[in-house]
Figure 1 (cartoon, rainbow, N blue to C red):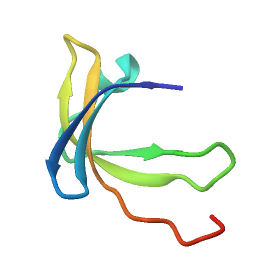
Figure 2 (figure 1 turned 90 degrees about the vertical axis):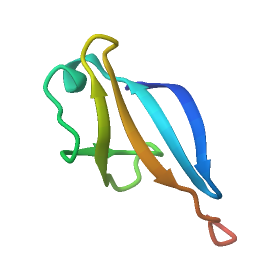
Figure 3 (figure 1 turned 135 degrees about the vertical axis):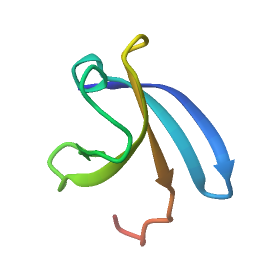
Figure 4 (figure 1 turned 180 degrees about the vertical axis):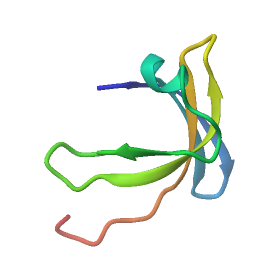
Length: 72
């Protein structure tokens, strides 16, 4: 499991998250995809890498937060 180390509000409901991911950051390029599992046991979500910093072992993703329907 990788750790979110920073969140930045970009616009309403849009956040940039920086994730400590040494193995991915060492090879990733912006525009490539990672599979994210926000909740254990739930389906993976493909997300585009918007930035990668091999020196810091960090990748960055943009996330659009949406409200979940009641009961989820």
